[in-house]
Image 1 (tube, helix red, strand yellow):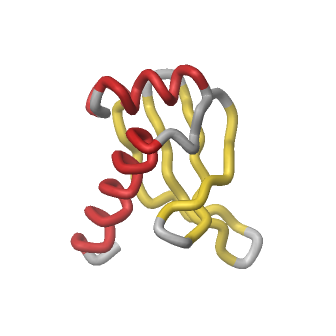
Image 2 (spheres, rainbow, N blue to C red):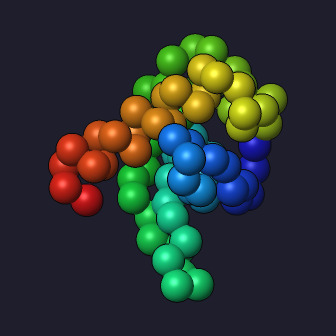
Image 3 (tube, rainbow, N blue to C red):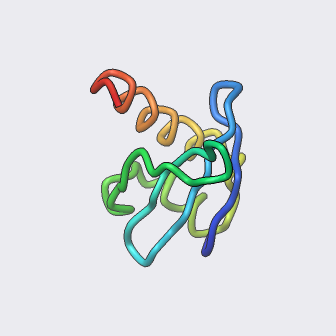
Length: 78
């Protein structure tokens, strides 16, 4: 996956953007992108990294990993 892709996680739409070995997760808010978190691709579980490399953003392993990032952001109060 390169560039930005809109995906659905937990019934909400998120923007995912890969910049080399960093994956940015954000939301569109009033026409602007608000980036929630940057995640080192190397920190994703193997199956999630493989799905990301294949560009399969609907893969359950990748969806679960990204939903974990979203939940961590909510827990932090972001």
